[in-house]
Amino acid sequence: MTATREDKEFHYLINCILNAILCFTASTLNGITIYALRKASSLPKSLRTLLLSLAVSDVGVGFLAQPLYSALLGVAFQGKKNTPNYEKMFRGFMTTLHLFSAASYTGIVILALDRFLAIHLHLRYRELVTQRRVVAVVILNWVSAALLASMELLNLTDISDGYYSFLAISGHMITPILYCIIYATARRHASQIRAIQVDATQQSGQVGDAVRLRKSITGTFLVYLAFLFCYLPNFTTRFVIFIAGASDTRRLCQVYAITVIYLNSTLNPLIYCWKVRQIRHTVVKVLSAPVLRCRRLEIRQTAKHSRKRSPECPVPSRVDMMQKETRC
Image 1 (tube, rainbow, N blue to C red):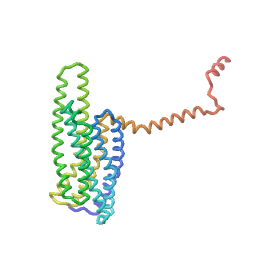
Image 2: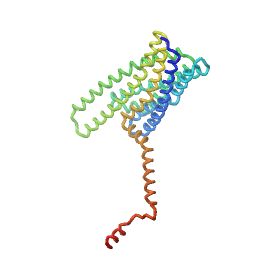
Image 3: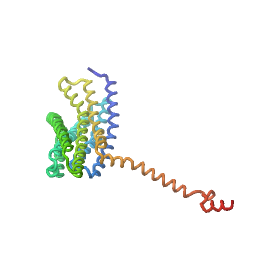
Image 4: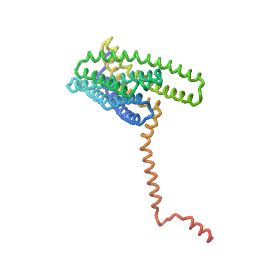
């Protein structure tokens, strides 16, 4: 099915506007989230490091990938696709797409594995999953994503596409299995805590740890669901194009699918704020700071004006009022 030039221009323009808006929201929200994560000292260090890695990849999407994609759509809207500048821009766009999507996806798989180890290892978790090891895994994740992006930059598209497909298929197989095991284990632990009768102090400590762990698992699972929701349209359109061939309609569907991918960078910080109390409090404090500052300034100005009242209309003191009553 073929689309007219006017239809293509309309869809390019719509996606260009959407990406311009999402570019701002992804950069701003993830910048605030990074600040909040650095301040949230009560979060486990491993979880905080993994969430910081995801937030950095989302900031990269907002600062690099989405502006490039918007510029690419703008050039396509002007009908200048067969130009050297468009080819360079397209290669840069594909490089950033592979870099940040691979870093995000493997980061989400690592996050699921971390929560799996947290609920299975119990007290041995802090002994085995040290901060140094988590940082090493995060660095390895970004190095592998950079290698994938460099393959795209060097025009080794067959190798990069194969590696990216392997990453997507293996991740979609591993992550649901991990969360199913986590869910079953969490339910078993909850029933055990309710059944065992221990002293009040120990029981409250166990219940508190279980609740915090369950909340962190729920938050990371929602991050995975958001990723699945945003990336599944792109996987589907790519698969359909690979099987049935490319057409104008399928290409336009892929344009929208890539925009939905970038929507994920805006959804992630909203999920963090919703499910992680420490991040939510810090974000509220950051966003309310300008309002509170303006309110304080308004109060100071009001107090200053009240002190500078005109001497022609002095405010009667209590002594003057008592003297007036005595005369009467």
